[in-house]
Image (tube, rainbow, N blue to C red; front, side, top):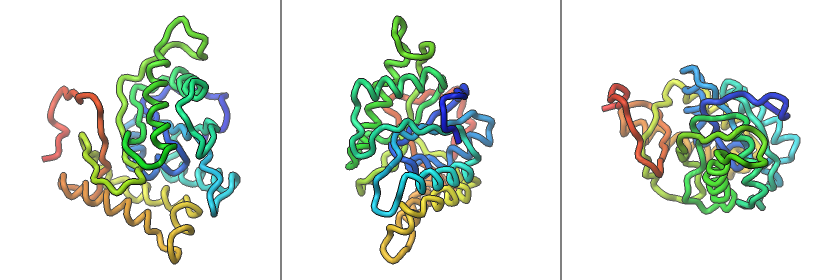
Length: 239
């Protein structure tokens, strides 16, 4: 897991997460699948996620490292923005845009734009605004101009809503890895559940099974897009 700016790999896809664990909850299976297909994948955690009732900065780092290992060790960096006070300010936009310019992802994954958690909403706005800034020339931003081709939105929401995805991706072969990754966050997803039961984790996999059922597979993750999705051929459609 990347802990410094020393190495800035060129990425095919970058998942932007408000807190450590959001990427695993919303897009963990897809991260594994993309890497299996040869994609260069990265995760940008915007905040440490602390403070929380049962966590600590040191423990969250350990849990994130274990989760990242379960996902196949994609490139990962924590931007260190303020948890609970995350806002789409110009300074934060600059920081995110510079990561985009230096890692040059073709595809961005951002939190879904409807949520009860202010940090999630701020993260979505930051991704969209930073994507625009990232392409600017005649700028003092670090790195060369770069414009990610598309933003896809994943679901790790704090609302009891029924997702309305643009498409779902089969993650059946990656479900065990996703489970291992989310279970690594014991302080957030297991120990803080009533009676120590992994209620959040159960709910996550109820949803992956639901979406998988609709397309005839065991597990799937849903994604939304604000823009039309173009296809060159229909071979990959699950019917």
